[in-house]
Length: 320
Picture 1 (cartoon, one colour):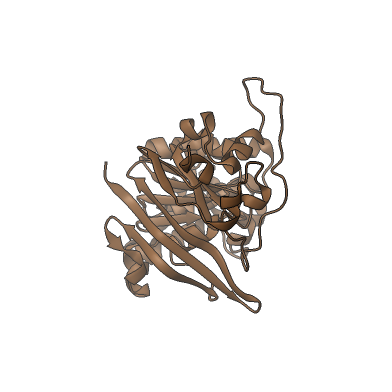
Picture 2 (picture 1 turned 90 degrees about the horizontal axis):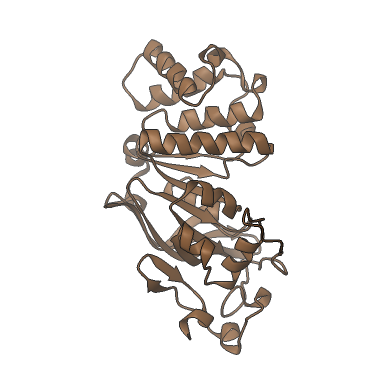
């Protein structure tokens, strides 16, 4: 199985008036063709920044200061913006942003917005683009007669489906879903997750799912990477991570949602995430970790392979 996306030692910093925020600070992972990779962690840990770096959509104060992002062997970071827009963005790699109401233009119909994405990237006329827009709406389970609806005339769940339709408009190989169920009620969340799962199987999509919810990752992903304070602390197959977490932070995440197997405990991660302007010395999780040792306060643990496809960054594991 070939690797579609390969990220090596990626570092993305934001310039602010108070200094440099190390939002992503040296992470590495790969996603194979046809696979689904979940990136999970608390708000502010750097998950969305990874997606914005892959698509080269970082805000003006954000900069990739180190590392590589390769897509099918192509170095995305060295591509000219014009070439990236023409060959990669939306055609090969697309992204579904969180907050569908804010992402859609309120003065254009949803059909026009989907058609515009097609017209910008493919050599088709307006009528064919409109027909494709209707097919895409049908694909995401929205009645085609709503092609002329404005965003405010649709429910939150339908708007999110429109965003998914737009992301799929140019038949991309790789789609990133950034918190796709944010601000939706639980029934609509379940419907969106079911839709994504169906699209993964029907279209043979390679996907990356960004979320704070390990239960969502367990539903949709083959592999998971756990991020904490700009670092990857653990990654591997979802079943292994869920059944036997190695990093203390992953352990907390697994225990923070109820189990269908009748587990009664419910645990909160103690403390608060660190300030990435001035992260803690050593392991960034050590101020919140119940197992912290002296070495954890002084030395940053290496991100090491513990078995095939399983990586972790923890002194406790490396000293076993």
